[in-house]
Amino acid sequence: MAKVTHTPADDSTCGWFHLSPPRKPRPAHSGIRNARWVVVGAGFTGLAAARQLALNFPDDEIVLIEAQEVGYGSSGRNAGFAIDLPHDIGADDYIGDIATAKMSLRLNLTGQNILKDLVKQHGIECQLRACGKYQAAIEDRGIAVLDAYRRGLDKLGQEYQVIEEKELPEHIGTHFYRKALFTPGTALVQPAALVKGLADSLPANVTLYENMPITEVQYGEKTILTHQGGRIVADKLVLTNNAFAMSFGFLKGRMLPIFTYASLTRELTEAEQARLGGAPYWGVIPADPFGTTLRRTVDNRLLVRNSFSFNADGRANPKYLQRFVKRHRDSFERRFPMLPDVNFEYTWGGALSLSRNHMAHFGKFTDNVFGAVCCNGLGVTRGTVTGTLLADWLAGKKSDLIDFLLASPGPNKNPPEPLLSAGVNMNLIWGQCRAGKES
Picture (spheres, rainbow, N blue to C red):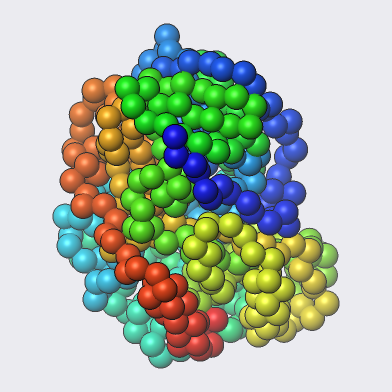
């Protein structure tokens, strides 16, 4: 029997969660039960895997376990970009190998289309808007990134629009940026509302348990999952809990729980909306990966996301909220001087599961244990498609997308501690300093 040492513990101040439609969490399990399929982690990947397993095996009961409340964890805390395009930050043109980029594009589009279909089919109110995204720059180095990415998009044959400084306020209100690259394929969502809606529309043969962290696990011919109220014996276990898979004994020392932080304003008044101008909703990602992400939401709030921390246990640390909200305020004021009295209503952190080589795990861990983990910041689309395709693979289905995912070498090994923490923290500090005005 192995103890699960790290379980999710996110802060309670996520604006997306509190502003999304309320729902009644499903009760935790008590006693002892056997299950053919057990999925651990009810974020985008786990919800997709449980849904597809239920469709592929309609006579089987699928158990889905969530350590917190659905929508409260990482999937409900991101910036809400369902991105279609590949973006390889290790390549000179941010596209890299064209064959790999084309497969990544297909994966992302498949995940995006799955979500669009589910939102339409089940009437999920999540502010989904297929409005594209802007990648914007203010520094010379950032503009060079946009030019390089444009060349990569040309190579990939993807549509884009270059928007110069004088035209940008008509799109996003602010005069802050010098140039932007608009790509039309991204969809924007209210992520917590989407996750909640996906959970409440699962097939009838999925049983969801919430607020039920697993405390011990024993592997063998069957997997025994122990929790505070009892245990569940699984014929087949599917892990979709990203970096917490390390606490279950897999990919130890191969994933990095990196937290990023966001603040969301109160609703803008009509007068403030008029002063801001621009489109009624939009999303901006920075040319520099350590820069600031912005959104204007459907309900007329502004979101600012920047700053990073390495939380090795995957759990929130309140000291970072107090530190980074000041940075959010400074970023907001530089971009929106016309809105001096607009305060933040919420500030929160959320984890990304990253690997040093930007690779994910897809497939088998050990006998009767499988997983799709480490989305590397593309959880909305990539989590959805990998969860779906993992369930298809377990049902014996074949496709070139499944073959592509199975061929991944997976996350590579991290240096040992204390070198790891020292190196990651130095890289985060340097990256945020180097971002300059993009931050």
